[in-house]
Image 1 (cartoon, rainbow, N blue to C red):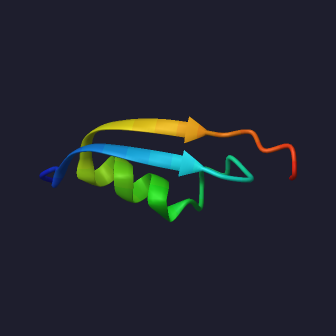
Image 2 (image 1 turned 180 degrees about the vertical axis):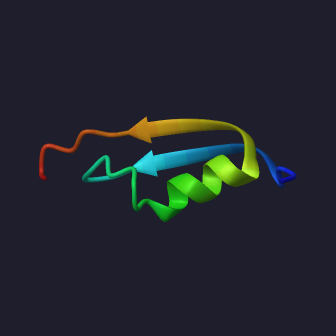
Length: 44
């Protein structure tokens, strides 16, 4: 499969679910590089 993007930022909010995270899988499948970001928010 040809990668359609060079880089993707995948931003996790509230949880780190990996198995059913559509944005994560799209980013991995369509990008040559990806950065995973999790921001801890004390409100949750």
